[in-house]
Image 1 (cartoon, rainbow, N blue to C red):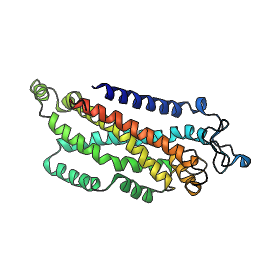
Image 2: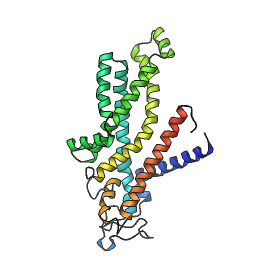
Image 3: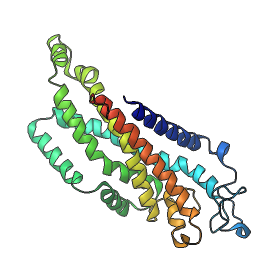
Image 4: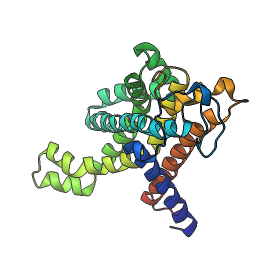
Length: 270
């Protein structure tokens, strides 16, 4: 790995660790109650008392960004984790199923992959209704087809590998051979993809919240904070800019880590 790439990876990991710390222990970093209002302090610019300024209700934007990390990161991790597990199970099933079942599953999967993930998530939320739980379900269903496709390809490749064939010759049961020799390889490939997918899931969840389909006020959530400041962007830019920076740093850092890990797994250094 080149020196510049190592530095980039180190910075990305440091950013993710900082965001994870904020998500797990927001009270350590926050300076104010994220829900406390103070009309007399409304729309104050960034300063010593309020690092990121205040919003229309006088709430501290910095503290709301810190507390919003847990919700935004939590939705992304939950959606990605469910998509990974579901993709592994369905993709592996397609990989070992008879040709007719495999073809039917992949045609349905291809139809879902033909649409942008955000559009699929938007349709699912429109059907299920707004809310953080429904957003997580929507993002999971939108991201799932990619994991299913990769799991199916990896399963079909690994099931005919020499070490798997050797296990079968030695009398290892097919299910046990799959669990011990195929599933770990498939899970490894999906884990690298999931690292990149976390950023996409966070971005999709923030987009849905921005449209008013996620948590409701006064919940501190990055996408909702973006939406809350759009009408006063010219007067109080800090209300939307700082949660926007938080989203950008998280998505870019997760993508950088995922892409570098994928490049290393493929034997490349750039």
